[in-house]
Each structure stands twice: as structure tokens, then as C-alpha cells.
Image (cartoon, rainbow, N blue to C red):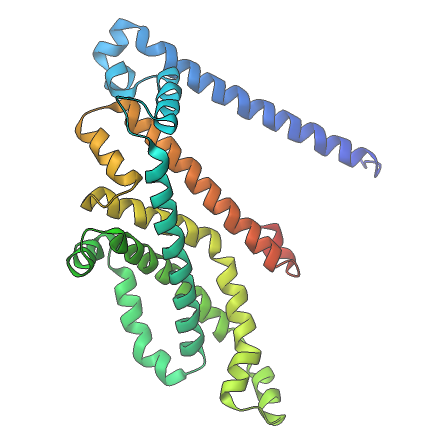
Length: 280
């Protein structure tokens, strides 16, 4: 067994991370090179759709199309305003869904009767595919941004509620007994004891909630034509424009990474005292 000196461990870890990044970059370059050049081989393009330029575009073409979408051109509308609408609807839906999920989780975790009555209904609704709610929401709210916000909030609510509920239920009975012995009323114990646990468990779910909220917003825009990137995406799909479709997918992927990264940073900031939560 080899025992490393303390000063050798950081160097070894640094070399490992360097090799990891080099391997990742090499893999990405290989994928992009195959995407760019393999469709130029006629037998492959004729035999397999995945190598046909019409169906998959090219990296250079996608980069050029992303620039056209961001800057605007006579052939392609500027995507930034629609991207702004999608971000706005997703963020509003995420905030509403997280707030209501935490609130309902807190209330039901503090009320055994309420939990027994309402939890089966919430669990049943959570098991329903989220896409089934979209026609109902659109009928009620109309094909407007309100629909995408409501769907985003519903998706995030279910993703947040169960975390918040379990957080409130994780409070040890002994702790609650001590609080009651000190003269606290049920509302005071809920706000002073359960609420911190509910908030902590809710914050843990923020990165997943951010991703779900964006998905709910975009799917609503795709299926209903509500203004946003989803509307532009379905238009490019109907026109069989693979380059624009992939470019929009990459923009949405970057948006998703950004929202998830912000949520992860917020989680680490708020849970700085929790080693496992800050490290994850």
C-alpha cells in the first residue's frame, strides 16, 4: 500500500481532473467531427438517416443558425424576445410552484388529519402524466402565457410538495414534546420547529424543480402555440428544418443548464451549514 505525502495529494487530484477534462474535450471533438464529416460519405447518408445531412444538419450550420436566431435575420425571427418570454413564464411558474408546494407540505406535515385526508388525492394527481393537465389548463386560461405559467407551477408543485412534506414529518417527536412542554402552541411549533425543516428540504429540491418548470413551460408552448421558444420550435419541426430545430434545442439546453445552475448555487448558499446538501 502506497501512502502519499499530504502535499502530493493535491497534485495527484489536479492531474486526475486535468486528464478528465482532456478526455471530455476529446470526446466532444470526436462527436462534432463525426457529425460534421460522416454525412459527407454518400453510402452512409443513403443507408442511414442518422448520417443524412437533411435530418441532422451539421455543427457549423447549427452554430450559424444560432447566431441568426440570436441576431435576427430576414429569414429567421429573432429568438431573444421569445426566449425572454419562456424564461419569464418558467421562473414565475417555478416560484409559484415552490411556494405552494412548501406551504401545503408544511400545513399537512403539521396536521395528521389533513395529511390522511389530502395526501392520497395529491399522490393520485401526481401520478397523472403532467401532459394531461395541459388541455384542461388551456381550456380554463386560454392559449396565453398564463397557461404555460400554470402548467409550470403545477409540475413544480408536485416536485416540491413531497420533499416539503417529508421534511416536516422528519421532525423528531421528542423535539416537538420539548417545545410543547415549554408552552408553545401548535402554530408556534409549526413555524419555529417544522418550518426550518420544510424550507431545508424544499431548497434541496430546487435544481430539479427548475428543470421541471422549464419543461412544463416549453411543452405547453409546443402543444398549444403559446408564445415562446416552444412555438418557434414547433414551427421549425413542421417545416422539417433540422438545423433550426437542433439550434433551438441547444438554446433550450443552455437555458436549462443556466436555471439549474442558479438553483444549485442558491441551494448551496442557503444550505451552507449542511455538508451533504452543500456538496451535492
